[in-house]
Image (cartoon, rainbow, N blue to C red):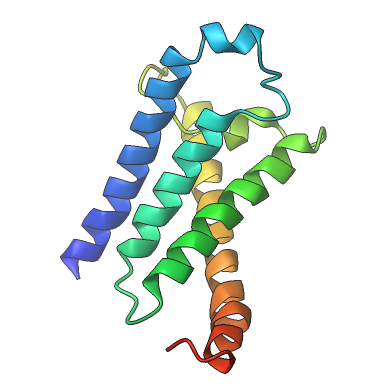
Length: 141
């Protein structure tokens, strides 16, 4: 049971590290790419975090389907929320290490973790109840 909690923490840590590394390395790229519509570093870090957290669940079978559906689904959900102008953009970003410890940062981090967890759960539910039965019907065990 302790290994699963470790895998979840590792997922958040690796996702945050990827977000920070790619944000630093991608700063010159911002002049050439429209970052408002598609920021590949943000969605890569979200997909990696979702994949590691899904892997840490210890699912008995079809792990690759669950990992792919959760990582691609979470990236798509966050991309869709990023396109919505009424949704605050700051909630959709990984909490970085260079932040000030205050209540606003705490609530933003809590909101981000909640949205990430709910979107992983939604994607896992869709893959469990829709994608896996279709794959089993097609003969993939």
